Length: 487
Ligand code: UDP
Image (cartoon, rainbow, N blue to C red; front, top):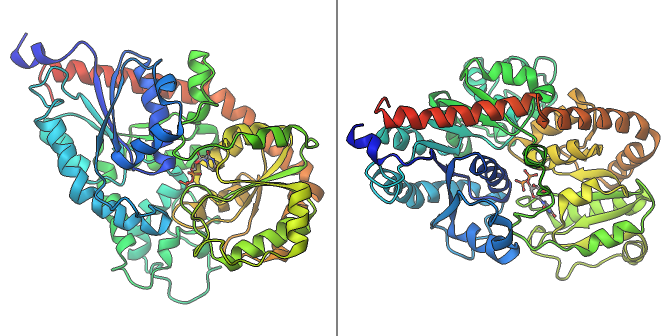
């Protein structure tokens, strides 16, 4: 046994660094929980902002006590506390993490408590795909890097095709026709129009800061030893097969919200890792609503809307005649709701047939029999949670991968309707009436079928179950390689 192997602890040690936002943190925490129950030590790196909110909003001690091998470390994200960390702030957040947090992360794993000379050195790094700096750090200590992009693989694949689109002259768009079909996204032929590409593709020039971040990510993704995705083969097989051309080692282990229950037979799906306080009163309200009568409305944790769109949405909901449960997240309306004149008829209807919360226990809501459809911003977690619950969707995407996800919901999986690029009360009313009424059976039938496939994928023998086994085996063999100094 050499010096190095003497220092390697008995357990493999995975260091997980998520993008500090609700969706990615949720996903990575689910992964951390799964790994930690399989004789893998996991250190989860949270920003202080996210960690404090987790502590404030969840039964943290109770939730995490069953995961003895899971520890947390925190570091600053570099943004002032009052920064809202909403969708429009992501470029600032990324820049700040790279300047302030990345050097601390590097120090921790190269020289600090988790460095090669420590008691329990890191044997594998799992980082968000957007953290291009993680590659250099992993290389410096000679451990494998796995990127986990928690957005949709179909969205990520469109990111990865950007250089091809630029080379072929499809980007930047040559004119304003957003309905022009996109050609240079292999595997997505006949599916994407310009308007279905991620929102940053509408930039007029290639110096756009978001485009630059994504192009840098595109260069780094293939450098990882493997890619982890929150999806399942039966949903995105063709995309995963395209993805394997740039990185042959793919682990599709989703839906992450249900795989832990299936594997360990513990009821964890409903336990929250939210950074907002969940208002459970909406479940009691749902309990007394008729079956499939309620539209659940949420735009996730980052989207912000104008007052005009907010009112348009409200009119559309009321005019549809459906009951609704609406998440109005604090800070999600630009300029706030103060001074907003509420039309009497909207207030009256909402009092009788609507319910408003500032944050909902979304998975429980979606699983509730009273919910008939989900009006969503098409974030990937929300989309997958809706698929698991077998609920059709009306999609109102805002940015990044959401444009691609909503197109796939309507065009490929045929689970609902895509309302992108508009917010008009008449359209909202029509779409809700279609999804809840005239086309209800067709959407429910497909959603039910896909929900069954999602569940089967995480059960023993299923595609995600097998990929998770392979991931765990690979992480364990990385420890052995580290111990024998092969890295
Ligand atoms: N969510 C929730 N309660 C809400 C709204 C959202 O728990 O009232 C959760 C939702 O279940 C999902 C996450 O927040 O897991 C949002 O992630 P997603 O990828 O859909 O969108 P993002 O917030 O990243 O835009």
